[in-house]
Image (cartoon, rainbow, N blue to C red):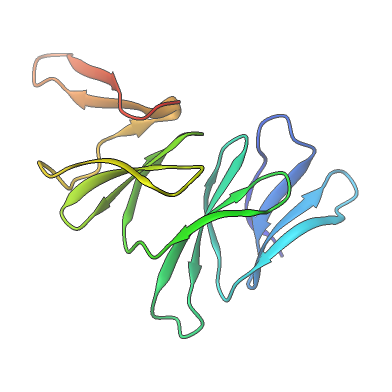
Length: 148
């Protein structure tokens, strides 16, 4: 049984998880296009080109964030990140880790920037937009937090 299904925009396949792998199935046949095995995977989300998943180590004690190319399942990077995922776009991932917010390149897994002023995840919306309360009646602050 596949759960956590996502379909990258414009694709002819679905991605999802079962108890042992992240799986991409072609539509409408259901033929498996590719799969990435893991003890207990969880899909965190998909973009048009990247699937972001959390994998658990064999002993169940550690987790890694794994980025895979959507069309063929090729692993782009994996990092042992005991972090909260704040949000992500096609190009960037924001995590809360070690009392800071870090921005990671979605294609390479390399850290782009960080802030040590806060570790609380902002409200990241579709397209990497951050929305915060302006502390005035009916006021909001909207800014581009992550590159789309």
